[in-house]
Length: 211
Image 1 (cartoon, rainbow, N blue to C red):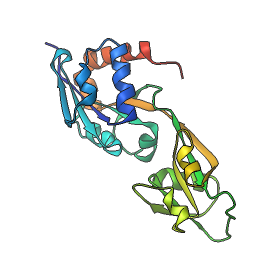
Image 2: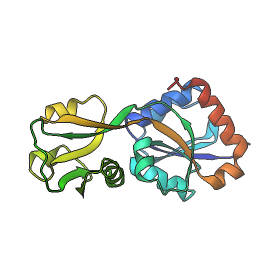
Image 3: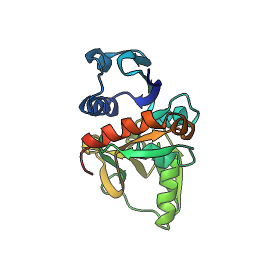
Image 4: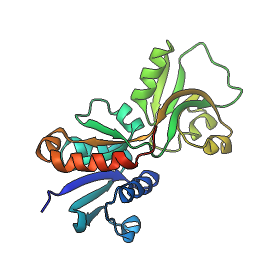
């Protein structure tokens, strides 16, 4: 019997696209896998276990070894750079980008502007590289609200279609980085289960669309 592989992945768009990719790579995931309300889903036919986590927690589960592998957005990888995980493969799914956005006619003030974001490390690094001094305000959700209520001058957030910005009267001001989802691995798991993990990577690599 092959070794059990535990994979952490977030619910939502990444989960759906990753499940489709695994099926294309000939992994036998039952139809009910997509609709499960469980947080831990076992697939005995493949000797695989999936942990369904918050996007920001996937790297933590992989680093601490409760998951051998994880599927995480590059945005999370950039924000959590100090994590002890290896990036194995760009899955080229869940494409979006990180951007600076704000109200269309907002003027830049001389003093340090306030920037609201879920990504304080990414934002700090970006503005430092631009030579711009800002005050970072960390929020966990509804980032678009910050400029509307006067909490912040600008935001740094994920943009996919731009529809959410548009609906809230905001515009994209600067493009920071393109984002896709990546397959990551725990270094110890990679040593102990290298054959099983290499097989997974090779099969996925065959079906990943070119970047």
